[in-house]
Image (tube, rainbow, N blue to C red; front, side):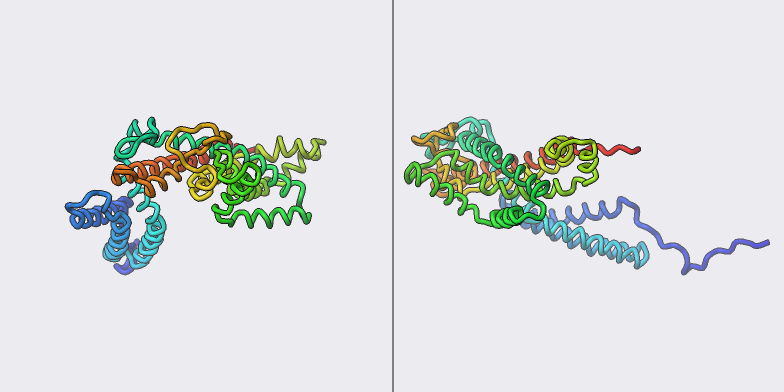
Length: 363
């Protein structure tokens, strides 16, 4: 009969930190970093608070603290593991620092003019305080919507040809090459191209909202093509072959099988393309121009200038009028509005991808 013997002290399992300990330690490090930066920033406004520095110092403190505490309370293997995890998290935070800094700066500077007047008034006859950006918001919505209506059918049909009909053909390879080239062209080139085309027909100095939409569509089409093409390529060929085996023609297979299967990814690529062009300024300065009045007709030729949010921000900084502080406040509020629109578009893209994705059911 054998009896149990106790394990030697060097074989006993090392202790473990509770699951909440790393999070509590992370919060404490951020609190310490925040207290230091708040004390150093005493007497200044929140806009001057260095959010990027606060986050970076907090993560550095966390890396050191978690390694020391884990070394004392756990084994060295656990301490090294927690150190590597903390370094990966620090790298992620460093990658997000520019975004956090930009969002913080825009929110702090723009929230002061984020009021009802800003969303209901234009800048007509306004030289100092007051005024709003309702004309720029309408211009952004109209021009972006027109660009989407132009770009999505062209881009989607091009991607369908490349995947379903043009495999291995010289024309398909040429289209792919030119799409790649268009993806990298500067936005100002798209604006110059559209302006030159309309100036040859209607004369120099022409400005219209439809011109801005066409300039944005030049930038959107390659993004839609590349995104939709990748989504169509990941549709399993077995689905196509099963449809062909039942005698369904190819065009109906694309409409009923391929597109519904990839619709979530296609909608996501469309939303991302919209978010990519909605903040463009240079092509819209050349094509849509700028105005202080509300203009909702994109094909108006006489005084057809249409303001957009990016151009509004630029205009407020370049021509602030009689009150620099008021103009800068309007510019920051317009930038905040534009960021919220882009965030809303990305949220819509994620919701579309979630609700329209094919439902996978087990046998």
